[in-house]
Amino acid sequence: MKRALLSVSDKSNIVEFARSLVGHGFEIVSTGGTYKMLRDNGVEAIEIDEVTKFPEMFDGRVKTLNPYIHGGILHRRDLESHVETAKEHNIVGIDLVCVNLYPFKATIDRTDDFDEIIENIDIGGPAMVRSAAKNFNDVMIVTDPSDYSVILDALEQGSTTLEFRRDLMIKAYEHTAAYDSMIANYMNSRFNEGFGEKQFVVGSKVMATRYGENPHQQGALYEFDEHFSKNFTTLKGEASFNNLNDMSGAVKIASGFGDENAICISKHGNPCGFAIRENLFDAYVEALKCDPVSAFGGVVAVNGVVDKALAEKMNEIFLEVVIAGSITKEAQEVFAAKKRIKLFEFGADKLLTADDKKDFKHINGGFVYQDADKVGDDEVKDAKLVTKREATTQELKDAEIAYKVASLTKSNCVVYVKDSAMVAVGMGMTSRVDAARCALRKATEMGLDVTGSALASEAFFPFRDSIDAAAEAGVKTVIEPGGSIRDDEVIAAADEHGMALYFSEIRHFLH
Picture 1 (cartoon, rainbow, N blue to C red):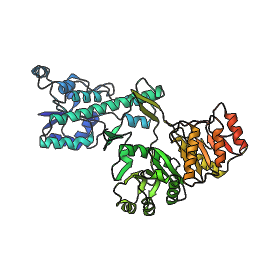
Picture 2 (tube, helix red, strand yellow; picture 1 turned 180 degrees about the vertical axis):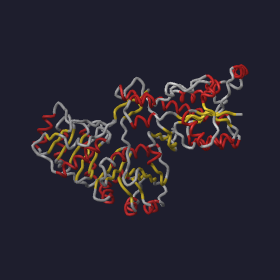
Picture 3 (cartoon, rainbow, N blue to C red; picture 1 turned 120 degrees about the horizontal axis):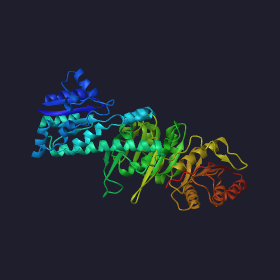
Picture 4 (spheres, rainbow, N blue to C red; picture 1 turned 30 degrees about the vertical axis):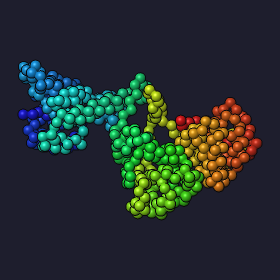
């Protein structure tokens, strides 16, 4: 008779799985709460201490760390010496191990009690998983309740091949590696401000992309905490590697203003249009005015619901991606005739964005890791007025929008906003003055008047020339971090031109 060891924290469908294993000729060995649940539901099982001939002890800290368990899992059935040793010591082979681990993440999400957290670090579970995975030639290792049906189908069809068991082995080591990484990251977060000697970035695969940035590269999307699995819905098309990057930036900007009706149009990861209006239709119309040429083939992020009227307006030009809180059936029908457009929902009534605490970027030979950057709720409100003139209420609103958009635009950048709509943007330049001039030149080409607009920069102006250029364009309010050795000259220039200048004293580079 084959033997299966079942010891799970997540007991979803474990009774049904065990009952089916019995039907396939398995004898069940189980531990603690799993054993009790099986017996309470009429499934015959052997309690673990009948096998180990040793009681659970130290409040359950020691129960499966025993030669009768690990010998039963690890001995090789193809080596006569192993088989004889097992017989000599009355070790019965274990052919299937079903284990998932103590709920460490649920514990740290629920409590800060360190003693309780420590007790929810599994020891015996990972040891059994690793043992079974190591001996995958002879043992099936099951760590995911969603795989129960797959295991039972394979048993039914007699297809528990070496390749099948190997796939389970890989998944098992991913399981224990992710678990240990989570513990190490938590401990470093608690005691080393999140920057330990080792840093683990662990994501779960959501899907493969058609290719990476270019057709000769492979690509895939991985997620943290089921962020995409639970919230991201593909309605039409397939998200490419580049689409996902572009959508990320656009969604951050569009969702960065709470429940307001905001729309961001993005191209190659940078905003080329943004507006907030009383309704989303008007917001899109205003956002498109900033740079309709760049918007062609771009990404539109809608902080709300795309209805039929908005869809018809969007359909007037070629857009590659529309992503929104939701897209109505009627709107989807409008887009149906456009073969190349891709539609995604991310959230519900409004767009959803993750509150990631850390950020990282690959560099040649490694990666750099940091606290995630975000504009504080009161950062603009608390900005320091350093000039004689004070901005109006609308100008301050425009300054806030410009400042938030600038924080999510490639440096060096400047953003001009007027009446809650972006009217000019210059980004990714080696010179901040060039960024300002480039933005103004494009605004002129688009026939947009920046007079009375607010200007934001994600870093300080090192010279007064940027202020002079802004004044010449008719800018009335500027917000920037400040901190230049020539701040006095910049302030004097703003006063000279009758402008309102605010220092946030916080820099938001995006490189």
